[in-house]
Length: 218
Image (cartoon, rainbow, N blue to C red):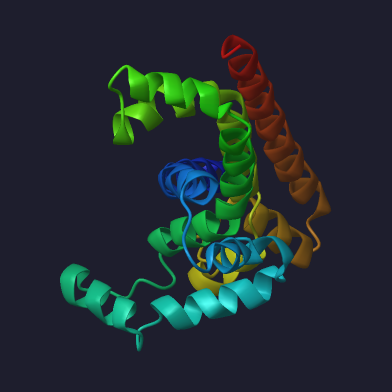
């Protein structure tokens, strides 16, 4: 059995989760602690990947990073090849699809932190990003870890958004969910079942590991 799609899926999901963690936690902190006009609209837009069909989300992403878009042209000018139908596009697709899972969980966890702890830290001279990294985020770590784990699981299992912007190129952009679909389309149900079982097993191991990390954060 060719496990290339599995290794590609793990690489894509890992890199997507790194992007999601940075953007999601920063966005969650801003939404939970900052007050600015349009905050509700920003959160609603960031949550769109949860409710939009993956193909619709993939279409909008394809328009955003396609060869005729400013991002697509800039990427091609620097790298020398289009961004779409590459594994990098798969990373972006997985990151966009999984972002709201991290952002919403992290936002709820940060909002639940008692402001009294932050006020005590400010009295002690801790402020700004030092306050966030030494007080708020550690206290919200369980919720943040839960959000990151959900984002990774979502990125690992993404299909619709990824196939729209990265395609189905064996050895290059064919992730595990796409490989399962490909085998089903070829009526190779035995291989499809094996690939699906491997993907499910990996997801279970990851979720158990995250559960252990959540307990350690207590």
